Length: 287
Image 1 (cartoon, rainbow, N blue to C red):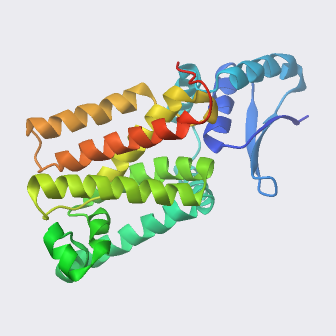
Image 2: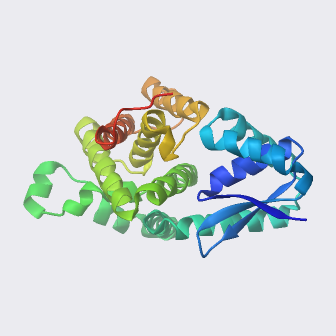
Image 3: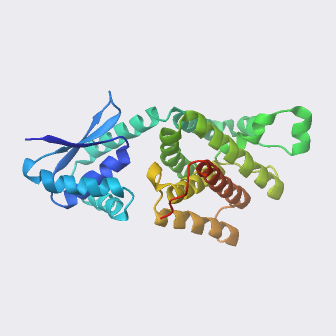
């Protein structure tokens, strides 16, 4: 007989715990309860209840233990769910995630619409309206939205997909945890800092959300390190990949011109915002 085991507010944690339980031959299912905005793990066999509760207690103490993420990756690799069903489930989860993070969704939609318009021949008027200008020009025309404008412009499909995947994943995490007002502040600060840095270093001909993405990487990385109990987490392998990508940009060995100043400034601004946020919350709990 199916029996509720534990309720978790974040889908990624519910999935990680469910995957780990399944790796221990304990069948469970994850059910979303919209009224309470929670994910309930339902146990398939009452005989496994005692062992499952022990695992749940251990998970509560250290939800970011790498073994849970590893179990989630392994489970996703060997799943035998039909492709159509898996795609439908992923789409539903994505839509639910964005519904709980409306600002993240709005920026994602704006970037998508702008990129779509640029593909059908409207890139020049879009660039004319959004591209940043030298500060002297902005002081004369007061078109201050251009300080944020480059974040919405992308130059290739790969550029667009890379940035928007990271934005939707990390931005939704931060917005669900700290609220829509905070993600707006984080977006504005990291976009301003990264765009101004790139403007000073190389001039006004650049675009992309990657400065903000690196800001999110820095914010989630430092927050997860100083305050793991807040539930934000970025695996060390992902942090390493993003830092290596940053270094490759400076080495100038990639096939595209990288906005290195924007990436670096965005990363630093995200780290600083995470550090400032944790200042008033007690003694850091580094792990």
